[in-house]
Picture 1 (tube, rainbow, N blue to C red):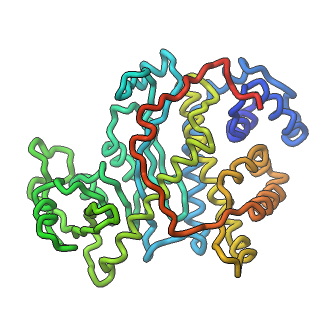
Picture 2: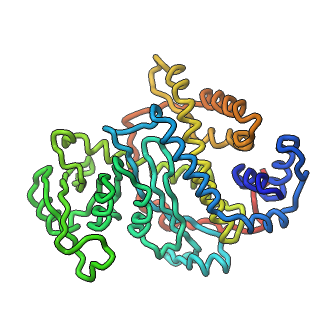
Picture 3: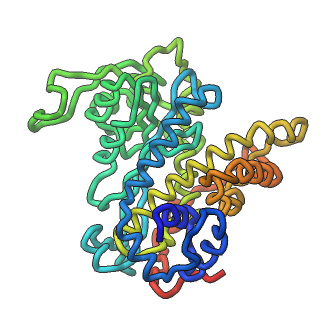
Length: 402
């Protein structure tokens, strides 16, 4: 199986049984790639993909987003001149195999219903342009803050990174500060003595100095015990009665007034929507292979496909705004349907002939499948809704045929 055919077959999101996916794939590309083989067995495909490094999709993704930011300045969405990023992690349930158990370990849920193999995904995400800047898939024993440090290598001057409660740390904030970037952490009230005193004071904002809580060696840390960070603490009352505590490097109160921070922090929700999309719509956990290499190929391929989808939706957005001008609600493209339309058409997008036609066809389809944006809707959050739910194991001989 030629290299190009192998890459395109994986980009085509094979979620059904491989025999059907391969038959339909080669039937579709017949005559489009010159002289190619007409079919291949599942075994031959599996052997060939073992030779392919998952890094190919990592490099493709970095190239894609690099060109977007460099060549499309008028399309890049910013907030007050900032590229707004967020970091978050999520657990992925992997096939239960000896190889994956060795690499990722075994997870036990709270009620010991079933043993699972899980990996930890972590993503650095542009929440305004909905692009994956960097992604990692590791053993769950590697913590979210450790992975966040790895993402910081992709942060640049002028970025603003928003973090949830699991991430606040002096070291991470200091590292971002050294990149000439800014941060917003949502903090626990008990993060340190300074935050405790701030919350007990009842005031809504204050500029303070925080120091490292490190008690051990500072070797290799890039800072010493004498280093400190000047940050702004902000308390925001929520409708639930809870007080949300934010810690940010945006200390200019005139340029960044208090009222902007609640909607600004809410932008982080887009990374939650991203995980929902790749898990429940792109069906990331329905892997096309059972070995470690196949899992990583599917994971990084999904990141790339998500970015391609976001760029196509962004390309079509101006037509949506024009067509929906004057309607009662603002409309957006149905992201679920758009992924379905990309099946097979994504192959044409990467061919020298037919790419422009495929892009135009996709844009036309997307503009005709919209959903209204209805603001003000609220749904009660059920934190433990899925806590005891067990996912069905992934069997090697049970793949979708339709």
